[in-house]
Amino acid sequence: MVVLSKTTTEQYPCIRNIKQTTFSTEIPLVDLSKPDAKNLIVKACEEFGFFKVINHGVSMESITLLESEAVKFFSMPFNQKEKAGPANPFGYGNKNIGQNGDVGWVEYLLLTNNQDFNSIRLSPAFGKDSDKLRCLLSDYMSSVKKMACEILELMAEGLNIEEKNVLSKLLMDKDSDCIFRVNHYPPCPESILNNDDDGENVIGFGEHTDPQIISLLRSNNTSGLQICLKDKSWISVPSDHNSFFVNVGDSLQVMTNGRFKSVRHRVLANGFKSRLSMIYFCGPNLSEKIAPLPFLIKGNESLLYREFTWFEYKKSAYATRLSDNRLGHFERIKDS
Image 1: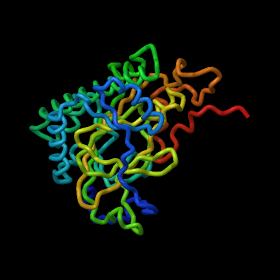
Image 2: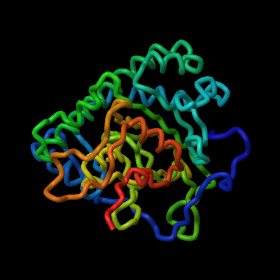
Image 3: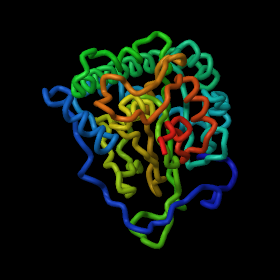
Image 4: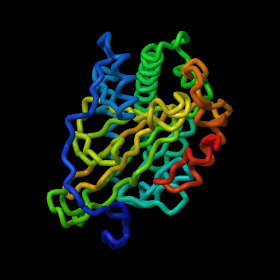
């Protein structure tokens, strides 16, 4: 369960079903093994800020084994899971998302790229299985990071950037600030199904954008993820446990001077089934300067954002509510 005490939907944010949201067939699909992948990535980032990836190179064995360990953890008694918490920000968290009042029908593990740190944080809960988990985390995170670098290099090619590794090198830095999150959304019986137009859906994770460069997400076969389109409408993303989904983050929106849009997304609780998702957030070194890339600026095009370090932006972003426009503080003031 998400909390030990008696729960009602009154404790969680809800959205009304003003209009039924159907599963979308619009989600861009990118096959990383195909020659046109670089162009499809650029198009998807411009139009959606989001795309699905197949032939990603991450072994299903690695995925299945880690997911199995995650299921075991979230099936533990609450007092056992608490031994891996509280999230500050890393470790086990429950219901509360961040420090600014956001809540959701979710429990989670937030981990770093440092497996020594993760082992210390998780060993009280996992006990003798800690070494096994350490190896699984290391294998999975290394594979996903490799895929992220491949995607960023294809992206650079698609943007006709001469320096192919201009984006991927930010992740290859030994001090890159990449983090890993496992979200568990237990079944929420109180959540009314989407086909009841007069009902409400309980929010599992509220609408937000990711602050990093890109995020790589996969989940089990339970639906719930939704993304916001340019016209402000929401579409549901069909689940596919064999594939990965890629989010454009705020930092990439800045580096492309707004050409790529950071995708706003949310997760709705499911009334009958658990949803388990694993997200790898690709952040640069804390001292890395984030600014529009000069070779993407055309002619007299105005710069939309001022330069800032990843540390500055991260600090600012995590001091806000989930749904806030986090980039607003870093936009250049337009000439009157």
